Image (cartoon, rainbow, N blue to C red; front, side, top):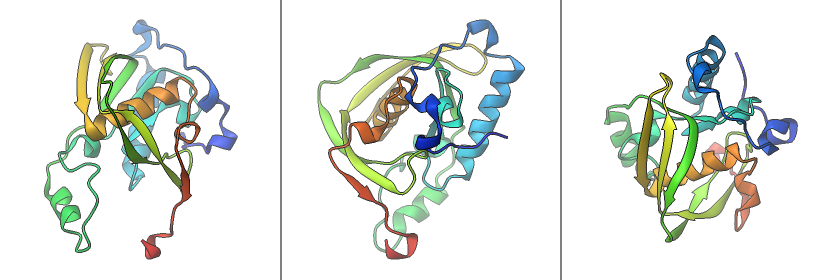
Length: 185
């Protein structure tokens, strides 16, 4: 199985990813790549999406975790952990696969959000991104679809699309911070 590679050891993160030929979407290679990405994403406590370039494959493909699609995704826990309990009680959604995604629309209005990356462990920053975004892509069966989003999910789309263009959030962050260890949060 593949692993999430740190950005300093992964040249694919700085490449413009190549399109997946439509005839190959259901190939064994792409199916195994998607399965590995889903497994890796499921292991990550705070990960909500992963691009193929993060596992060393410079292909235009990303997966959004079902937890990012839940209505509470991205909310901060209050001091009593009540929102965490609500999240655990929320039914999970299946992961969504985006093959050859294209950003077809973004709002002019931008908002800063807290952002991190599975390839840049131990850091986070504030990144201004469009508040609304629409992506057109193919799913893992090769069926075309479009998905519009606002807020957190729109932010996720833009982060993943940047990965496919060789851009990391640390290139755009207004400020970067070191993560505090879990017991200090």
